[in-house]
Image 1 (cartoon, helix red, strand yellow):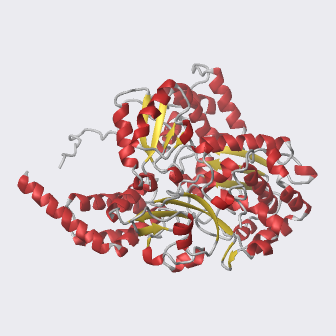
Image 2: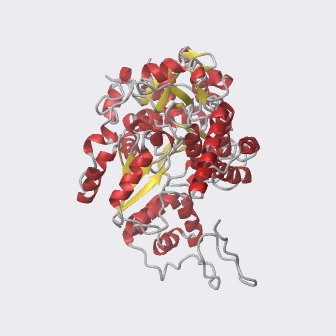
Image 3: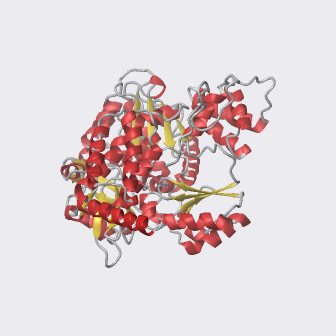
Length: 205
Length: 423
């Protein structure tokens, strides 16, 4: 059994997951006069805000846009979104930590999400994930993650490679998949979900 | 009979030109020539039950929205994340205009002037297809102000989520759409009275809304002749797991489950047999091979102790230990629990720990009783049904595969004792 670290007498308990600077107050809404926001990001966020009756609805699209620019929801990315939306950084951080697709740590430019939920794991997804994870190794360019059901159990086991669904995959596909990602080619073009016909024979023309 | 999947792979069906050539948006013209009450009447007489999981009558739900000129909303739930479910994905990708047409007609019936499609963030291709279809529909006057010269106006926004199972729960979805964490709300008030931005809101699943144009075309009474009395119409079924031809199939409700699993999907691989199957996504209680002749419809499956849910059949064959299935399922709900309600947050967490103890040889048969009672204490005690969604299948696995779990406990304990002595 591992020992649970306990605070010393008089010591203040720190935050649940990460130590925080207790001496610092909470960040306020960034001042637009002193916060630099890239013009393109500002335009994207403002456009998103205009689409909803309540501009706050644009929080997730705005964080998506900032993540695309910065690679992850970094403190700077959150500060820029907070500045344009007039929200506190803490509020946006609460969203970034809630949603799986928003990264709260630096990640490579390429993402490979392997579905390891029930239908995929019945067809060998755990071994596929292990093989992919092993093959990528320490490469910081590619972020391999086990993901919850991606809604493509018909092509199990499958992966979403930079948002493109491919499957059914076997361990033999791993080297070519990674080659395609590294070379910037379309990933396993014959195994993409986009070209797969419906399973129901009677629905075919 | 194919309604949603009729020649769905026809090239270009995702474009307005092909959809219109096949008679698309004719139902919208027909609906706009009727009064909203008449359209609502057709939806009610069709008997269409919601395809997202709960199976509530769609027409009745739409009729709950207050009348009058206040701002009303229609939200299409495209956050398809129930494990095993992938029917809405295929619909949106291949025939997006059918969904848009359904949304416009349903909003006309309910008097909604703003609509949203909340699509899960992982569905990048499908959201792009919808964006393109939306632009075409808007340019052709099927969306916007005074649709086709009528008094009905509707805006539509496609909102991409960011990966959270709980946002498929209708009130969690509303919070997420308002730009918050997707925490479920206390009901009542129900969304029909107080939903998005505190306004009356109609929330329907993709498949439900995509069926609306067919109901208007055929007439509600004619549609109700399909299927069986309490479960009318056709249903998309996603079959996955240990079957030879996994995929989406459109069936008439009420056909035996055996016909879907063996007839359409080819059954388990040669030499293996069905051990258990989830009839409606991983949150449905499991059924066994003995239940394969149950008619696949809402009431028959409920009678067999399970549910039709989202229409996702996951087949597990006899090569898989039931414990592995239980751990996978429980871990998913543990990860996705939003943490708002104690029974769900703690219950999912402890269930995973107890299941893992079985595998590591630290469990006793009494643990099964404790685990079963934990499941009982989750069901019905939370704001939403995420906890129930774990408790129901796990509870059913303990009840139906108790012998196997007990021998697993014994074997694992022996194994760990041997390791202790040898180590």
